[in-house]
Image (cartoon, rainbow, N blue to C red):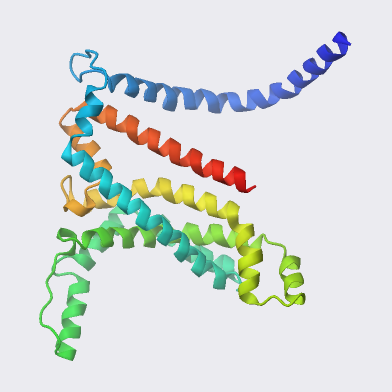
Length: 296
């Protein structure tokens, strides 16, 4: 009996060995380039920047009473909670009609084009469109002259409250493509027999969408939300190149704050803020994963 158990355990271990060897390089890379540096950041978050003296939670107390940190957190959260629902909904609304086209593959490549554009090019487009003498103001001025409703329009949108919505529009324009592709992949993977059977039972288009298509898109939904959540933290490049280290308050994001703290060598505050942001990101991803597993 004991021999049989040992033999089974030995057999299982032999089966696991190739799997562990396959994962070992990736685990070593994650340990070396992610976990160990983050542990170092956690250590620095409870020390002074210059002397390395232990300060406990003082750095955390400082950042949570820092007005720039609170402003950056508020703007980042606002941007995330506005953009992700919009991106998910817009991508789904575009994917539904595209799924009926035979040449959907060609259309998908067109939607992925914004991802291939360099950030510097996107920033140049922003400046050409939304600055005081940009195309948008010129078009509004021309429309006002034709209708007689208003005169010359010369608003610097990136220096007003509208800068937030310009940032949102840029995020949607750049990221809608991969969202559409993921939605299309999910829609096209649904067996057509399910829909045909529902139609035979008298279900109309909207009932098919509600009771068959949408329930089968949960996997695509969670993937899109996680990718969109992570990509929402990458919009800083465009905002920084357009407006610099100290942009209009509505688009002052966490990455601006980290950059300014880095330039000023305030590594203790930056480390404490990085630990807080990392904890929030991990909690959000784990929550989404838990909801996904529960639905399955």
